[in-house]
Length: 148
Image (cartoon, helix red, strand yellow):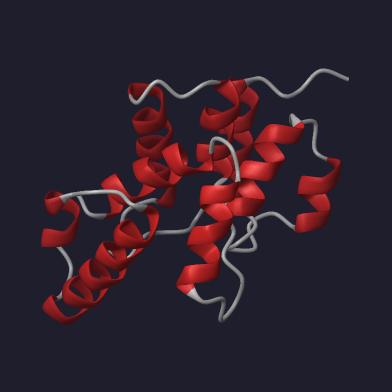
C-alpha cells in the first residue's frame, strides 16, 4: 500500500490534535502547520514534511506508537517521528543524541525550535513560562549544534 499523501497526513494530524491548544491558547494545529512550513522552507523532503505534521502526535498521546507502527508511512518518516518523540523523564542529552543519529530528524527539530522560539509566540506567554521555555529551547539548540 502506498504511503499516505502529505494532504492525508495533514488531515490526520489536524484531527488527532483537534481541540488541543498550545501554551498561548492557540489551536495546536497552527504549530504543526508552522513546523511543516518551516521544514518545506528549509528544503525538507516529503518524509520530513510528513514527520513535521506528526512530530508531537505520539509524544502527546494524540496517536499511539501502535498506530505509528502500522500507519501507511515510509520507514524514514516513522523513524523521524520516533526520534522526535521524547519519553517521560528522558534526559535532553539522550533525546538530542537520538535526533542527531536519525537521518532527517535534525531539520524537523530545527523548524520546531524556530517556531517555538518565535518572538511573537513567546511574547504572549507569562514571563516565568517564557523564561523557562527560552532556557529549555536554548539548551536543546546547543545540544544539537544549532545557533539562534
